[in-house]
Image 1 (cartoon, rainbow, N blue to C red):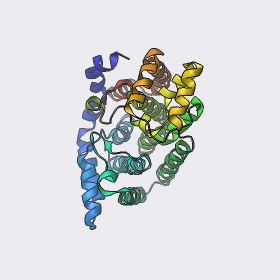
Image 2: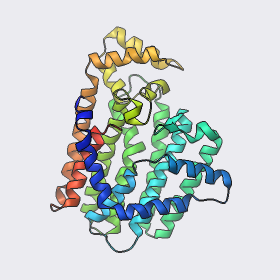
Image 3: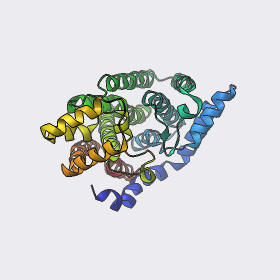
Image 4: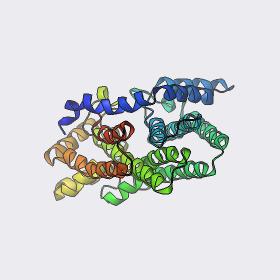
Length: 337
């Protein structure tokens, strides 16, 4: 999709608008995260400090703050506490993810597991999740506690489902969507729903924001998986072909397999049955992806979820907050990092 770079400035503006609209609270979220990550155990402190330095978009925290704002929550700091909590759940899953995938690079920097090893990374991820549950209990709202704890369980199940289907070249799109719905979209949905719970909104508002978050998350993950076959590390923060080298079957490969001729299908099947794949094999797959116009096909699939996310906000009156959340759907699809 040639518009990715062309639209970069406009798209990044939607993310920046959300960030700027809650900037004062986001600073407090960062402080809360630092406070919760601190530890008397020097290795934990060293690893969490390194994690903080790797940065990140804080998109899930921003969604919590943005959803709370559109719902009129203004008094108190519960949104700050829970935005930090949602972000720490995400951070913990990334640490576990990198161990499972044997990843060496994230956000353009070495992963925790590549520096300190798998055992330490898993334990520090567990430490983060423990801190999250402390924060949920501190908040004291049973609905939020139930939502975030069940979301954590859903993310784990998504990871297992992905592992179960690893290398399955003829994976159904339905299975792929189940995986990314659990792994990614569930936390987006929880982040936006938390904002409405904080403001004591009625069920239809909660459901609308949850639906918005889920479909935003699906769009975000489809874009992420597509960028892996259509980007460079300088734009994206992870090396192109990462999913291919790890043997992950994502939407570009699913659509390619559907369109490929019988010889190409056999070739793809053999590639993903192997324990390792090399650069020449990636080039061959990239050529097939280009020939069959797979990237455009992936973005067309994502457009469906963009429309669902955008339409779910129709329940809200027109406002700056609503416009920012609507614009964010384009950012999630067409971002270049």
